[in-house]
Length: 135
Image (tube, rainbow, N blue to C red):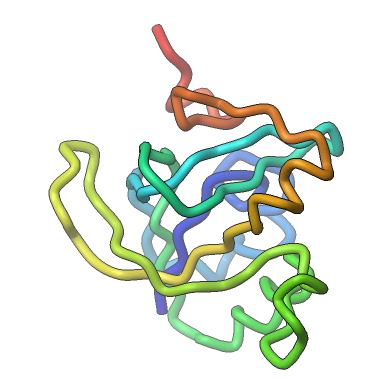
C-alpha cells in the first residue's frame, strides 16, 4: 500500500517517527500534481491543480496504516467532505524527472479550507524537509 506524503509524515519530520517508523518498507522522493500551502498551524496543505508538490512515496506492508493516517489527517470517508480537514484520494505519482511511476493515496485540503486557515502558497512546492530546499 502506497501513500504520497509532503509534510509532517515525510522522513525526518515529526509525525514520521510516530506513524511510519518501522512500518515503511520503502521511501522514495517523489512528485505529485497540485499546489502546496504553508498553514499558520505549522503544517502544509496540498490542493488539486497545476504545479508540482515534492514529497515522498511511502510503501507500507500493512494497509491498516490508513486508519491511523486518516485519524491524523481528520479524514472520515463517511462524513461530508466539508467536515473533513483533509480528503484522501488516489493520485498519479511521478519520479524526480516527472516520469509517471505509480499511484498512491494522498491527502488534499479543499481550497476554501486552505483560505479560511490562512494558507500561504509555496510556489516551489516544497515544505520543511532539507532534501528539497532550493539552492
